[in-house]
Image (tube, rainbow, N blue to C red; front, side, top):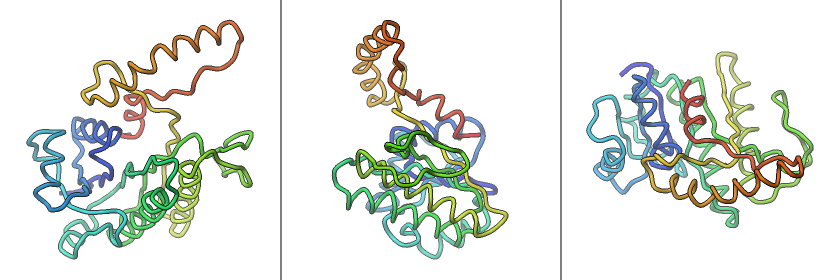
Length: 234
């Protein structure tokens, strides 16, 4: 195992799509999977990929220090992870404690694990809605003083700041932040959640497009999941 990618959230809707794409492109992927034991963790990834030799599964939990990894796994992965793609997240808009535990504390544990493994590039999946009610987003700096619609948006804003601060501590570190809006899939998606989301929203999108033509107003901000995966895997 050399120059592997550590992927969190590999069993989620976006993460599972990224996992398949990374493997299809010849990347060696280490999946950090929350499960009761290693057998269950492997079974969850096998349900997505089938039996493959280019994937390693480690049982873990980002809400725990070192993401729940023991010394043997940390020693095995040290110096072998060149990039961490952090997809794991809570999408809970109401429970601030749960959202912060996963999206803020969990990210802190992921970054601390990267220190331990000497991994130097983090790919962070954020959201376009970190802008809150600010007038714009900048690639150079985050707006300050805006208000958010829910705790999820705020947690991702905090996460972006954590990623930037972690990167600045050492000159060889890099970060990449993706800010998708509303992720939707395609009708041929393998996972039902994507297909169901697309089919449910299709009439709404068609109606809004018609209204946009009449009023010159912008359409709903949608990010195709396949396009998101294509860029995140680069």
